[in-house]
Length: 220
Image 1 (cartoon, rainbow, N blue to C red):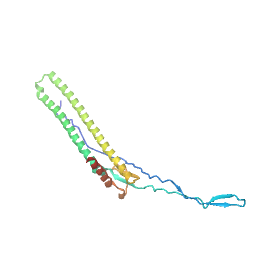
Image 2: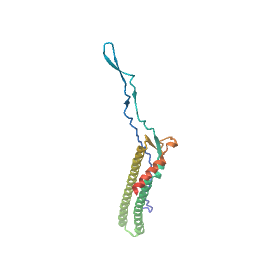
Image 3: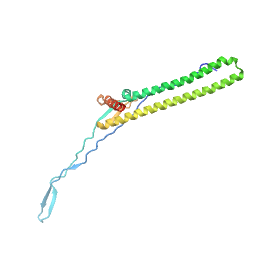
Image 4: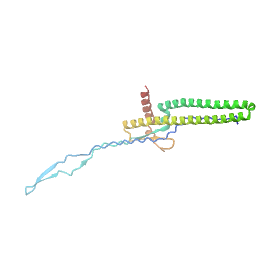
């Protein structure tokens, strides 16, 4: 049995976000109104009275102009600057360190058992060596299963954390868009969601301030 038995878990915080916040707020036009029509009465030679509009009836449509406000935010800058994401990452990293500590305990325990076997192997009978090696193999399988369990737990926790933060951001951007009359708010992601956008349409800093103000208000 080889002495070098490397079993390690890789817990990495890698949040790749490429989401499209599509908020369409179209103002509803007001109901059409008609101008009052002046009626002119006339009497012909037979005494019949007829009425007719003084001029051709013209519809005067009064509508509230639909807002054309469109903007975008930069996903990387938004997530890196959002305090809610920073706190979520810190919490996740703390859990990741605990999982890594558990993993190291498993690895060291197994390595110690292997070293003890190697030190005693020469003094063992063939049957004892075979039995011990079988026990070590079973323990190795148990360690691998525990590591897989830790890795699944880390992945599930990371996914849950990411989803919660994105849902909060999505909700607040929707709230911001409605209250500020935006027809559309897009997100510029590294994946190329938006190829080009004028800088005056970039409201990342404004939205980020709104997100952090809301988050800090809740945390108080």
